Length: 128
Image (cartoon, rainbow, N blue to C red; front, side, top):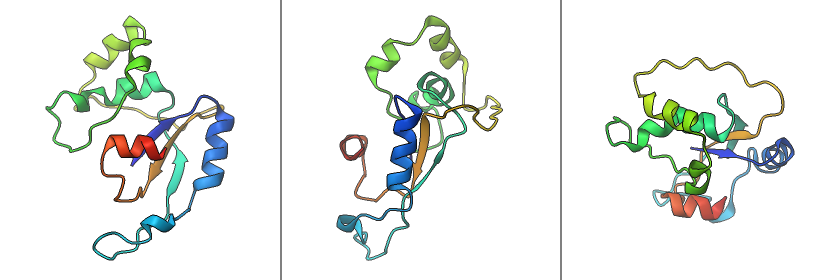
């Protein structure tokens, strides 16, 4: 799956409308012959780049038990405030997170059921 932060809520809405439940012909079947599920695109509970960086940065430190490794654009990370960077450093895998439903105009989407051909971050960024 992937979290994608759009510049505007309108861009996020259009992307969701255009790609939710879409299947791609070149990935109609995985190498094992299985037919993948269609894309599932939903509004993410955590909205915004800074908020997602604070929430998921700990996955980069190599101490997590998951194989997930998020990609954060280095330019966007460099633009974070000292307060946001400090908050991200204090957040760990064991930190409790309370996540309410997003309010307002959401710009962050979660994309599930990505094709298995998107097997690394470079390929996924190129597709997106």
